[in-house]
Image 1 (cartoon, rainbow, N blue to C red):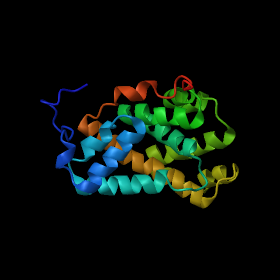
Image 2 (cartoon, one colour):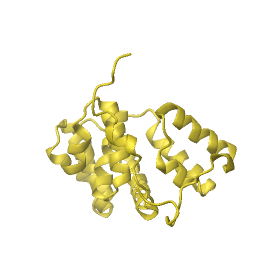
Image 3 (tube, rainbow, N blue to C red):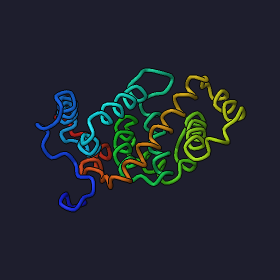
Length: 196
């Protein structure tokens, strides 16, 4: 972890100093997960950007559409790995493990999604997402046809591309800010939950 005294962009340490809407969002996440993910307190240093970031994030990741929650997280993990974003690979890898109830999938996708245990549909989705993330200028009709062959619509293609594009921004800001994953993320979803 980085030393907050020498960090170029330190996380907000005092939640009470934040605008009420941002503080409430952070506390709601803390209540649900048991900890505050670093991204929230890093981005809170600029309230308007925090609001814009999480509004778009939520519009993409929480809206019901043709992609499952797990598929959305697959896109995040694969594209974040291609963009060398440690924070997003680890944090969203944990979320992916939880949604898919599969402790292996996130690591496989992060290292080489082409070798991961995925369906043809998921592989086509990630092929498209990676093309948008790395070579959006080369996307064309054949890329959409490959998605259509797996049952995706043009609106699904938009969602896949928008998630890849949004997380390209997120990856670059996480790297710029030196954002490190919370230790809690590393173990989430790796072992079955203990029954109470």
